[in-house]
Length: 365
Image (cartoon, rainbow, N blue to C red; front, top):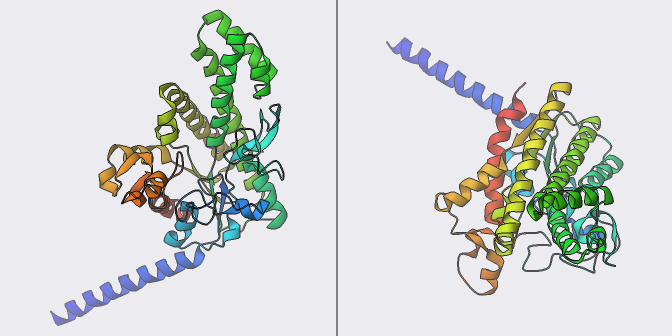
């Protein structure tokens, strides 16, 4: 009997030793963490690129939150190697170059919302031009050259393209009401698209149908540019890529305050973007056998909004920053810090969500 017990103990000890060995090997095998995207992932890059200390306090260290963003929390939680310069995400980034209204009121091609006439911080960013997702990748190629096989690359992009389309939809309505195409053209609606929108409106007499074409076109362009960026990352040696799909922008404080129509447009855009993204990434995976994982951030946010107490969140519809400035308690446990950006508390929830999903994906052969 004693011999049997001793054998069982040996087996248990051996099992635990092997588990520790596997854990050590996995930790040792983890590579560097890189991230590309917009303000949702920006760890304070605008001052580095421009010399302008934005966003200002009470934003935390020029990040679009009241603390670290998920892209900083994630490598700490998941034990990936990370240094701040590995974060290429910049607030305001579009997926790629798009036409938008400039500070002079005329249309031009821009990479970043903060350089346009709709910037949150105009007129600080007339020059230099801030990057898009695609130019962030170009910056990596110049500075870092190549990824290592065990590096993990994160992408979260696409929301800022919608904000341009929302402004363009207002300009289109002005064009119809005044019979003056300059409103739409100066807002950056391409002439061919404007003609199709106008033709559709004249057929249906329905603004929503015509603007739906604008939203569809914006989503198509955004996904095409995102996927082009993914292909460029693969060319640079990326072997493990995770992409966070778009959250429900329509449920942010800014869109709630903008009203039902703006929320409806945001909802359509997000749904189209996420559907097209999944389809096109599936196509890349079938063609290249690449390891790319799309994380359903949209569903995660819906769970936070529908059952906030389960996650320690006390407010899902107001801005925590306003509560902070007004001396209200517990603002740190709001879902959102400002009109569209999550609090540091929410950012950490996102990081844990990503970490949980990545574990199986990263080590799966």
